Amino acid sequence: MRAVPQSKTSRTFRSAVSRAFDKRDYVEDLAANSQTGLAKLTQNRKWLLTALGLGLLATAVVWIVALCFPYDVADIYSLGVNSNLPRYGTLVTVLLMSVPFAPPFISVFALSHLIFPSPAPREIASGLMSTFEYRQKSSRQTLIFIVAGMAGAVNCLLLLIVVTTLNGH
Image (cartoon, rainbow, N blue to C red; front, side, top):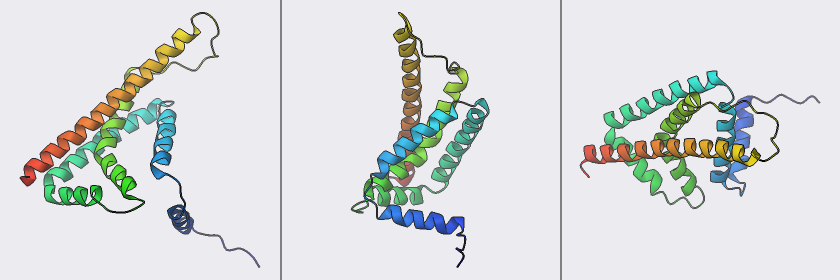
């Protein structure tokens, strides 16, 4: 008997169901995959330009939706953040907060890497100044992450202020 090939949708659905019954920490998996994806993004300038454009567009869409439907946005976030889901409550909160946080984070991250590109990887330096070079590169990457995170956090706070002001709460 020959095996019937499965569609991509059924494989995705079966994978999602198996993950739902798995005891893994989804927030840690999400963070690890995000960091790997961001590291790959910095390797290609064309992808950085695409990420910058899409991040700015997504930020504009989030703001337009929040300004046009402030009551609905407030209801969705209050239900999501205050959910009593025993296992997925934290995941739902993280996913909801990533909607206003991620687009400006990615935009600032891509813009920073366009302005301050990482030098081409060289051989591992050995010698007197090798730790200094590593430290300089590491501190620049850390600063880019901090600035991008601050941009995402400011966007979240401003969106919160605007939605609560429009709702009258």
